[in-house]
Image (cartoon, rainbow, N blue to C red; front, side, top):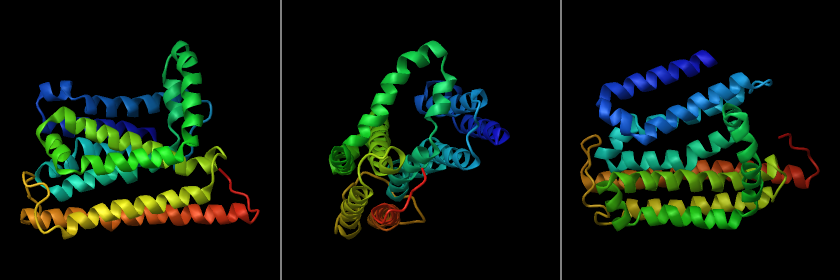
Amino acid sequence: MYRIVYGLVLLFWSTWALAHSPEQLLLDWVTWALVILLIGWLIGALRSQRQPGAMRCTLFLAAWALLAVSLVGPIEHWAHGSLAGHMVQHMVLLAVTPPLLLLARPMPQWMLALPSSIRRRVGPTLGNIYGSSANWPVTAFLIHGLVIWLWHLPLPYQLALEHRLIHDLEHLLFFATGLWFWWTLIAPGRLGQGSFGTAAVFAVLTMMHTGMLGALMTFAPQLLYPDHPAGFAGFDQLSDQQLAGLLMWVPGGLIYTTAALALTVFWLRRAGGGRIHN
């Protein structure tokens, strides 16, 4: 497993370096953040007396690889020339990598990668955040939904296209609120806080409002983002916008629907007296 990690680091770094100048490589904070997260996880795993299981390793590596491909890899390049590519990038940040990362539980490895003095200082604070953040599912749902709709309004979307820092902020908010939202869905099983039934309802509501946004993009008679280029498969701008809407509406909706069904099953098992192993 660790050879795979080393290989991912080398492949990621060499591929990125071939496509970018040394100046870009040194100044791009997203690249450094991804490398630090992966190396930190590896150091923590090596220091741990109890190694993470194969499933947790697989989930973490899958989440990290998807982030890398989306933020600095092929999907990032596709997103610059196609609204559909941009939507794929958004769905990865909103609905794919957050649950994978949360199920992988990488925090113990990241904590072990820190010096013991720092670990003693930040550990209790992170522990409090870890537990208390799960107690606000309604707030997480509302803020996550607000972030999704805000950044898909024409003006903020255009600003993100024109300014790299705003674009990075958009992605950071997508991913951060996505982590918080998905954590409130997973917390009833991990911490025993909240209800799987409530979590299923929020998953359905998120499927509905993101599907509505996708449908608006699909059926809009005019361009919502006229300055975004369309470079996918020879599509014109309107067709590219329609494809982007379909990607949010259908595949994105399937992710939230699958999550809602799984949470409903857990809720019924718990209501029926069944035991769910975390």
